[in-house]
Length: 111
Length: 115
Picture 1 (cartoon, each protein chain N blue to C red):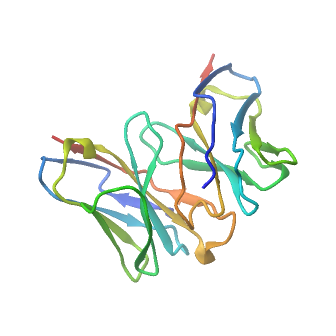
Picture 2 (cartoon, helix red, strand yellow):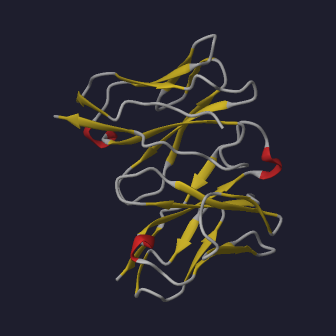
């Protein structure tokens, strides 16, 4: 299973765009990249998933370069409620096989 | 759709006791995974059930066991509780077929405190 490396923490201000980068140098051909958000004492919540290039949904964008050894989660115009821990996961099936969570990135959004 | 539901939400047990946690997967999901999350850490994979069998297991002792029922719901049992078992226990379910890129849906968790 590919190991991921993320910054431990990040600070931002309301209204700014936040980019969290994840390194996964030994990603396998069949692996997908998935990001989860977790608030204290709650289960992780799926944000976005991608395989290559760019994926966008109503809450975030995911940028994956051609070599797929890293990925960047982009949160547009963050608000105080985006303060949470963000996890980057790499694997074939986040639910189908064991999913390895790292320590995640603690994002703190300030007013 | 109720999503993934777990019970109870909170639980306090004494060292040496046994505990059973329950999980109902999201409608249409047949795979259930269990995670332990200590304070300030990421979730750690315990095991996964599919077709009523344990398919994958993380680095947890045999005190941790589970079961999946024909309706896909699942139980996590922990015997001989230790203080270090205090954590948030998360259940995740996923969609059928174990397709590539399948996302997992998590429940709210059960907060277990061992005293």
